[in-house]
Image (tube, rainbow, N blue to C red; front, side, top):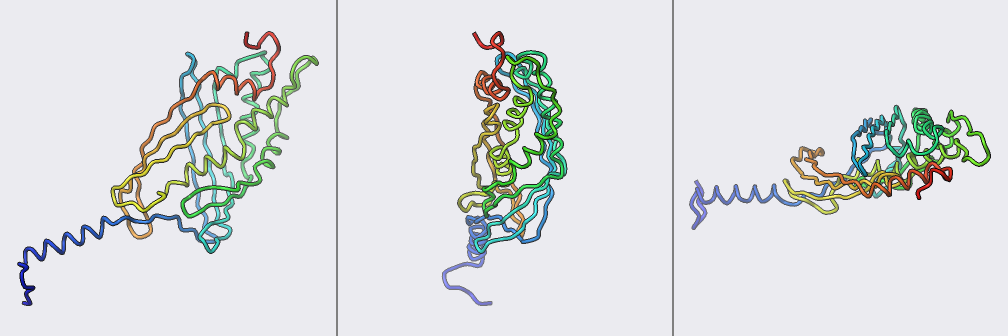
Length: 264
């Protein structure tokens, strides 16, 4: 048996184990790797309720999306396409009951129009950290949904056009910014800098900016690495902004209300 002068066998074993542990705890650079032609299906589901000004707003949203990699650049960024296999959104808010009875027809009409975008597709760019940009074709999808709106016009020249108000709500709920933020929320989970096993990083974002300003704070922790697959532990909190701002934005989305319904 060869001996190393000055180091006992037990001490040598301890040095080797220490070296292995140190190697495993080195920071790891985590990036998204895309392959041209690859396709993945996602089911995005969210639901909940929140209180504001003694009112409760309930919502639910379910999307089934198929994402396809159309091409990959030399830098690893992908040109992506996304197809809606299913889209369903429901909201029950006190703000939707503001105004004349005709206005109560707007939310269900908009929800039905949004369900009709099943089968529609759009494109976007995706970088190696999962950041989404250059979302396109959303305006065309909104236009098609608007064509399917089934809301009768209001009578009387002094009252706002119900279909025009419905279109405002449609664009407030579904638009390029909202779609980009949703995708970014799902795909942009990678750290900006290398992290060690057990290390964490944080992200903040805001959703429903057009109607309810909800702030999300999330913490990601690297649990394991096996080949090209990582496992993350995710925790977070959500906080609601000023409810009066929500009511004001909902009113703006619906259009001007009759004078007797305006705030005093």
